[in-house]
Image 1: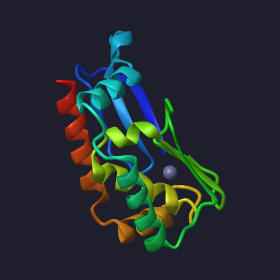
Image 2: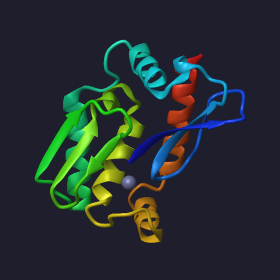
Image 3: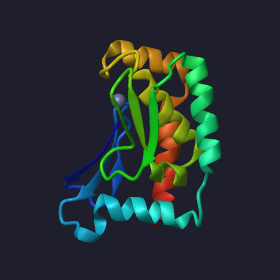
Image 4: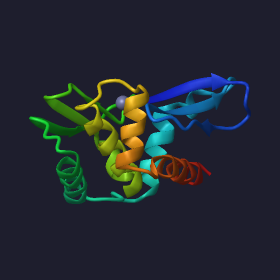
Length: 154
Ligand SMILES: [Zn+2]
């Protein structure tokens, strides 16, 4: 699952709603200060500590692995610049450690999305329909998260 930054004509920072990525639109004339890393670190720093603990993260992960009957051989949490998560289906999955600074509903979404790649490797129609079956409110989760990030950036 990607995090993308795109430059556009718009005057303010925006976000798109797509299952495969969280795209952040920044103004064309934005300075270095508006780069993704700053936005993300501001977002995560604003929430003093962690919004969720690593224990809670693992709990959510275990719940989804049980529900989806998916068991990665290896799971790691590490800081990444351009992705919320990545995986080699059937084997390993890596989650961005910045996720612990994000709302729990978004953490659940990223986990569900990534584990679903163990069943469907791309973002085709089947992926989207399974995603909606496992998590009917995934779009709402992303838009709530966008509101959360925008509030942190104020
Ligand atoms: Zn994906």
